[in-house]
Length: 238
Image (cartoon, rainbow, N blue to C red):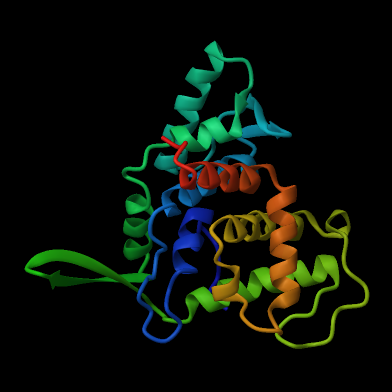
């Protein structure tokens, strides 16, 4: 599989949208900027920059690394946190601007050689088409996530027999435990984006789809994104 080193959750969410044959990104219209926002918040949780209890952010720590998008969001959250006791996750997802949205992550993936950009025109208007290289990278990420969920829950993957002895995350070495938690957060956002049927189709994908739906209910960030999208669809969102 293509290594996931240095790929953030928003970047992997975008790669998961790649058509497995041609590699063209098929990004869902409408609410995907909310999912990207959730990916940024999930990165802050995973790096320890924010702590979450139930539906609220309850603490902040300095952000390591050089992720300018996450750092900017963290700075705004810290400023808001000084005037508001415990920021609600749904409020946070709403307040991350729609723009630049996915653009910095698309640029980063292009610079890393994982995307190419094709200039196209439609009705005389120019637009950019992003194409994954290799085309199957989204499938590789989806398979990795499914394998993680299968190890933890004993689910079958790709029609294979279920693992009768699921592995507890607490029993894993620290690096593997961190990677498993990252895959769980990504799976929750796959569910919030309703990508699970595209990524895990048919009877073979049913156990993974079930695990994804469970994580949307369990993980605070994914649950917040799902609620914000539902609110938007009902006409209540900003």
